[in-house]
Length: 400
Image (cartoon, rainbow, N blue to C red; front, side, top):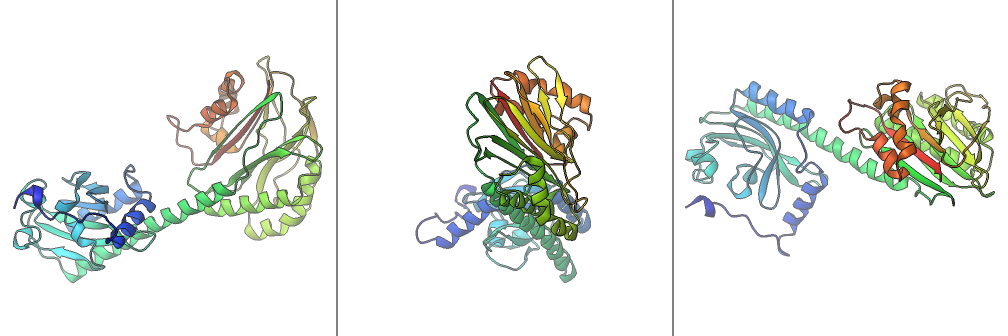
């Protein structure tokens, strides 16, 4: 038997529905063909040292190939599925142990045994996807035959359980992020004579930021950007609660009054949650360019003047939920032709080292770029910049 005809896998057709479901599960993990992640790499490194083996890996099995999400040792990122031990290991819920591959009829002629990486020992435990099918394995591999005790098997299964929890967490956060993004209101067209740009960059799937844009019953254009304390799922739940409370007002009150109405519903909830949210809300008359705003602790909104000057809009009160029973002031601004209003969350400041001067130096792109949407997305782009561990959201409204 040659390597080209070794254990060919079944074709996916109407008679192989379980395999089709398994492949859908592989895709739903959202781990296939993604870069290495330290949360997985540390476990494969630990396993290699703990068992004293040549290699350890976390695999995903597709229709025709094995992809290693994480590995350490003399392995290849990809292999033909039909050649691999993991293809056999996913057929059972139990740990598969091959103490001597040359003595096992299933694998003795595999090119992974007769050639690189010269596998002689294998122990692998299946990993499941969101739908409950076996999508891959966690395994340890050696280049010499060896025994594998019941205690070692238990340790391998314990490490596999840690990996499984990480995979489940990725799925839960990913599903939450997709739901959260689907619940964001659609971005409306900019008022006549204006152009509009937005960015919404969660740092870890579920975001503690939110924004909403729209037109009031009186014809004013409204801009709301908020940021719940913290990050991740907890902050996302708080952000959704605050956003709902603001929307429940109907957006009909003046900015300061809007906060007071929302706070009447929110204060007790946020106190129980031990959280708060910063929010900026403004309304603008598109015809005159005159606007009113209230800022609940955000303090990062700016007017970018056509002449190159920058004006920072000061907060008009504390964050929502920080001081129950608080009221807010209202202030005013005007957008002349060529001016722009930028409303970001504090993740944008973090992106520029927490330094307002550095942030101001970067704002030119928002004034000069022809398309505000491209400009604000470029301003908030993390790529090639320092590590930022906060969500970034921003709205840019420019008067043409």
